[in-house]
Amino acid sequence: MFSIVVVTVFLASCLAMPIQEPYSYSSAVGQGLGTPFVSSGEGRITGVRVWETNNNYYYYYYYYYNSNAYISGFQLRYGYTWSPVFGREGGEKQEMELFNDEAIVEVSGKYNPADYIGHRVLTTNMGRTLSAGLPSQISFNFYPANMGNELRLLSGRFNGAGITSIGAHWGLVYTEGAGNSTGNSTSS
Image (spheres, one colour):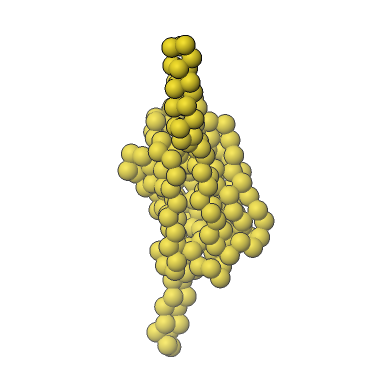
């Protein structure tokens, strides 16, 4: 009888515990026109490349200056393998290789609802950042809903000039004794 009570209490306590979803999604921002993309790969994200396009307009007679920068493309490295380039490799390239046990835990920036993602900042659990583009227009800030999760993939849309929308997918990475490695990088 006592063992039945113990088992019943144990099962009831298991049912009372909240089940934490191991994944979360930060809804896409931006215009959303163009070709859809989803990055994917095996293991952790170990490197990031971002291309930004700077369009500077000068009007000498009116003394008008307008600086318009936006994210034209990006690429993620999973383990030692680079994903395809989403968008295009136009403009200035920013690159960051992650250290062992370093993960991206925040994606933030600015977007123009009429056209492109204008600015993107990737922040790691070690406090390092990769910033590209011009910080103007509407802000966004993506982060995982669950403690211990990290960026798993990015999704969104791009056209011939740049990234028009972006969303972030978060989750746990189950790697047995494997961390990030910056010693052996593969370029594409």
